[in-house]
Amino acid sequence: MQDEIHPPSDKDRIWLRQAEDHILQVLRQRYGDVTFVRSEADLRLLQRLLDDEVVRPDQVLELQCMGVVLGNVFDKHTSLRWSVVANEFGTQLSLHEPEKGFTMYPLTMISKRVSAERSLEMVPLFRSFVDSLGVTLMPAWISIYCKQPLDDVTPARIMEGVRVADFHTLAEQYDVAESLVKPARARLRIETVDGDGSPALRLCYRPEGERQLAIHFWTSPSRVQEEIEEALERIQSKKTAGARTIRKHLGGVKAVVGIEIGFSQLEDMGIVFAYEVARWFGEHKSGLIYGEQDAWSLIEDNCFRHL
Image (cartoon, rainbow, N blue to C red; front, side, top):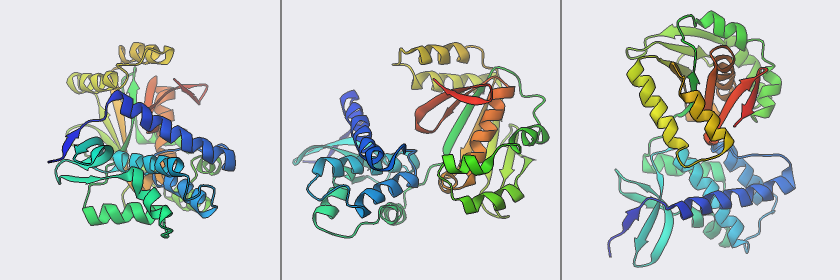
């Protein structure tokens, strides 16, 4: 029987969320107020559970929930996508790469290794699969839906707002190594670049030749409408007060800013600078922010208010 590949059902996605929440509670009971950001930082949290023997080889449910967290990192940052595979062995949640036709099963990747008492290093495991499969690492994006036009936005204005931040405190909040703060701050600058026909900026904080943060401006009515429609699709099934606020805000959007973040930049000062730029647009351009973990925010009194 040939494998049949289907998108996960609503029930499957609910189970994935519940599995992630379950292992997050295990982490919080042991290590305090941690959270998942769907990057290698999540894998380091899982590594602590293994190294400290918080999760035992016979705790199959917890090990499979850890596999969900691993799968979420693959789904967020590579071309692998959560799917349901049906074949002669039954129906299973998996990750599938449609172009290569490759399927992997993250729910059992950790449990099988731990049960067999094999050594397991979460970050090297993830990287080895990325390298061996040749899957594409996808950038992350922060989108800011602005009610005010961007005509007067300049690198100098953004820098004026960003440079006053307490980067040491922010680095701690984003779990970025303290040693990365000073060199990144010393290199920090924003410059104008060509942006494929649309205005764009580059925030530089790494050594010359390395990937920097790209900041895109989309102001044409057709492109803005396209971005708004995509945003509405993300919340189409939500009926909360926050969703109503989002829909109302999107009705008055005049421009959209997109901050492109490479995978490795989620682990260094890139993620800190990206959200500080987003904070500036939220404050000065009435921006609604959509970022990591499908989180929507407005800026009130220079603070993020999650919707």
